[in-house]
Length: 413
Image (spheres, rainbow, N blue to C red):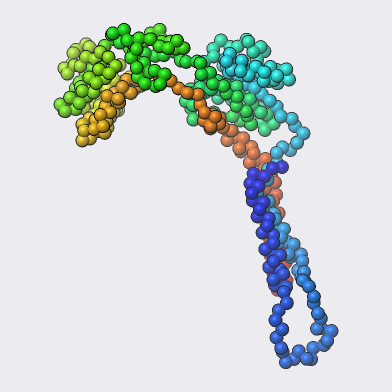
């Protein structure tokens, strides 16, 4: 048995209250002279020395009521009905050579003890040999959750089981709010700092490549460090075609200036069309009004508060390509323009729309512990384990209070 709220046991000190009250009421009172006292028989004038324990049963009942209440508030829980059961260890391993190399001793020891060891795969299957890994090592958190759910059914993970998770510590794990584990678990996560993702890039017209550098800055250079490599095909190649469709000429001039600043800093090649060229595919379209016939594949940047913009009228295939500023791009209405941050914001828009991924660091220990949580079903199981004893204590408390009240009323009747 264990107590979920052991601090409540300090309430047992309150048992001194009924004892002090009892002795207070039994203390010797002040002698008051009375005219007929002299006629009382001498044997009725008994001397009482020391403390008297009158109504001892009532005193014990009151003390017992406080002790039972304190124990009830401490939330006692029965660990298991059978305390002789042993803990079952189950191991779930990401099929990655870096993970298996770092935890080879632990995994070989588990296999030697004939403990269950599984690869995270679809579906999960037992590990026969650490070198015989599944073909795919790419892993996302949904696959981890799916593998845990499968083990919950096949291994019947419960209170007497402990799940060991062996994972590669990477930022992609945090793409979902949490991963639920149905039993007690230990997390073994290792970060491979030498591993870098294949770099997405925009191929510029002057043999330069636009990408996110190791310090998470937008950079234009022809090559990468030796530890990284570019993807075989760029996400965009050559010139950026931009269409300007403003009724407000002030906004148009401000956007043109911001785009020219991007061209100067990153050597971008951008063509600006103030008049629509029929049949031309535009990468960006800047406007202060809702488009009548949106062009599929174009990125719309709509300003001027979007008063005429109705997203319900937009075709489904254009919805991911709409950016709504919510304000007119003027110094009086936009902080981006007033603070000179509009070129930087357009650069972030370019990074986002073309998927130029930033360099990410492994999750911290605290982030990992927050990501992996015990599932609610186990919390309900723990509550159910403690429910019988709490019900019994509550019934005992009610009976003791009723008995104490009956004796107190009977005595004073």
